[in-house]
Amino acid sequence: MHLLEVMLAAALFSSASASSMQLWGRVVSASQQTELRQQQLERMELDRLRLQAHWQRELSGAQTCSLSSEQLQAVAAAVPVPPQLQRELLPGITGQELRVRWSVEGQPQLKRERLFTPAGLGLCTQEGASDAT
Image 1: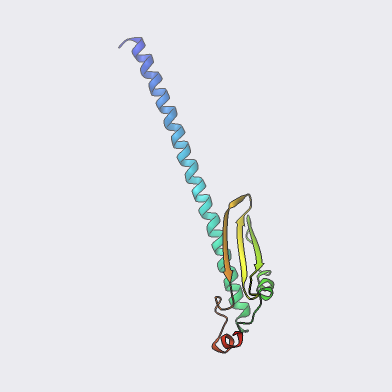
Image 2: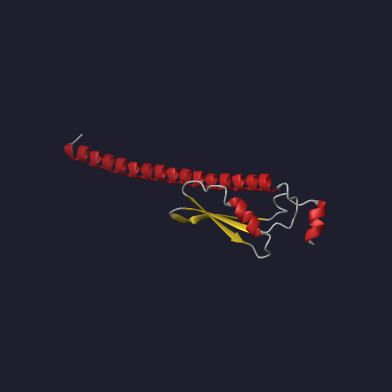
């Protein structure tokens, strides 16, 4: 093998290795970003479940459909927001519903939103349902 062939083979091998390393680095970075996003979504879901359980525990004695969004907000204020999450409580249109919006600090594109009502939380009974109509 001549020196020119050896140098050309070395150059090709070197550029192929560099390209491979760049691609591998991008794949690892994308994988880490996906895992981080999944963890943040899980935090949002855990906070939703914690809020829902707290409402059901605190308001189960009321057993009425006439709870207002202000009452739901007051009970939700006792549940701390997990780190790196932002929780926004917005009253709904009817006065009995509460819209909860979660987002991650520094990532405005990652949001979740849920609408909660006394009926949806299982707080209405047959008597309470007829009172609300």
